[in-house]
Length: 229
Image (cartoon, rainbow, N blue to C red; front, side, top):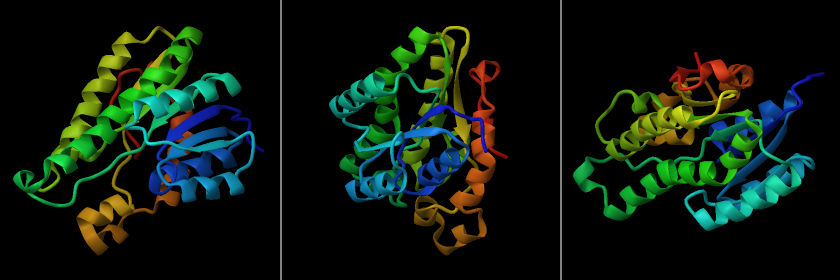
């Protein structure tokens, strides 16, 4: 049996990497607090993973909703030991000038604004305790670029800078890390690569490596741009 009795908060748990991480952390004895926009997926997770785990329907782009969620969880569970900002959207493949203002704004609102909202409402409690690790999911497209995904690239480059600046603001004993998960066969990747995405690892296979990697992060990793190999 695992001895990793840590409190892990994950956004975007309804599918892909978030869902695989949720299962992986729970298998290792962690308590997982998660959110997603899909009420149906959240209800299913709550049926499968009962208390002390906690799953809530929240749109991270809605600051007021994140604030309400954070107040409840901090009151019932206390600050997380590991906070993973995973929730993200990608634009449909298109040249930048063909991406509508509404689509562009939504990608930025979730991928950057959502991360800031979660940090705003959970990290002060972690700072007060002077303990905890914040992992903001970046991407290979946060360190390089490609055609037809300019909005997504812009947000992930922003996450790299935001996280490294946050790392400079944290007290000793904490860490903030921008993490490139690598190339994984998710719905998001299939929206870009189509069937070719199937040649990459599944989220479950990825999580088998990622969960112990994430549990091994600590203050010495503060500000480092890392990749799950």
